[in-house]
Length: 369
Image (cartoon, rainbow, N blue to C red; front, side):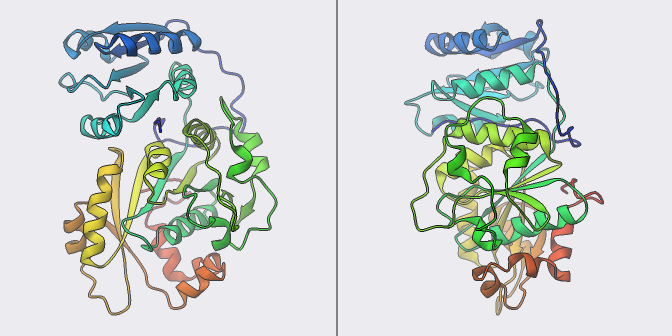
């Protein structure tokens, strides 16, 4: 597995961003003492048409850090210079195991790229870093335990934002989740699903992606198929390309991440902000606290799901998890049956569901807390 990541949140971008020509003077800074990493990154930067400055440690990097268009930090580096912005990408090598993700979380890296598999993504990322475009926000939603209600929360947030006029894309990030399209009763709606995009690489045109995706509830969605057939995977380069196009073409992209480690690494590390949904149970809180170790160092909040007969103590659950409590996912009569029958959008029109979702949204549907 490999990793990559995000442009900063902001306003919406045009439907067609038009041609883009990278500047000639932008410099990528690489901080590493590894000759293998240096050689790999040199080839990638050359392919991206950029200039590379390599230094061996953070002391030598400090004078160049803030002026660089992108900063890459090798997995051999264990500290950052004081009062400098965090590195954009932590770069590791195949064989490093889980180390790059744990290190990225501890030092605050925005993305992880494991080479050589992530070479194509990193070249694209460096090209765009020299002329960044404004983009919409990517919000990830994951469950602190199985059956927490993350899909419900993701669908209702997307539905409410679309109802307020925002351009919204809902993405199914869990290949083992049975297909988000079933919860929307949209399995027969024509349009691309994840297997249709396997192997897609490079820059993806937001307008073309928009035209190819199915819609339900006023928003576009990209789902794994809701069939009995095993879901074929897509690599992280494809995921990154799709999320990049979504960011450039939408005010808000909501990702139903799932809880599998590969899904977390493919999708969670592409998100600007993350919502963790957890039932009001102590064991669920413990599971959610463990899940946090797999999440990127982005702003993350907690949603506690109300349940019949449970003594809801949101602040206590939040303290147990170690996240700020943002709001409560309401318990609505018949919700479980509605989910099974594909009527989640119908329930999302109820006042309690709208109130929950609108806690995250600004007046135009694109501002998330």
